[in-house]
Image (cartoon, rainbow, N blue to C red; front, side, top):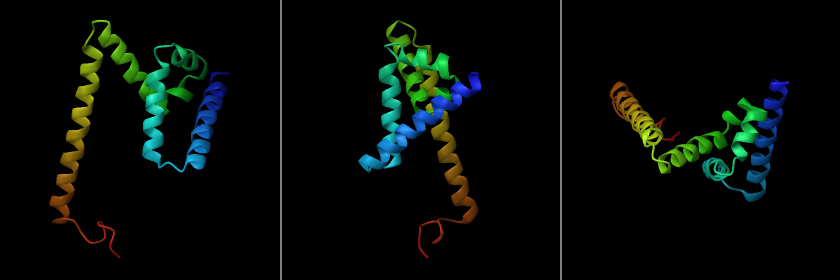
Length: 121
């Protein structure tokens, strides 16, 4: 039954975000930020815990789940535990460093940006 609940919750959330994107004509990055903000706003009210216990991975894999992690970490920080915020900031720095290094490696391997990678035909 938990697989069905996860499938239903994930499908409903994806459909709602798709409908919202179609009617507002917003681009996908703005929709993702909206989902993260929605997850962070619903966390203090316990709605994310209720949805997560019912839908499981159907919620955890969505951008709303990232907002839940951010909101929960901030609530822990306000409660006097700075460790979750430190972990999230550390992960952000690690991922940013990986992106910079992989970009530098690509430029070094290809001897600079090529016309194909810059969008020219």
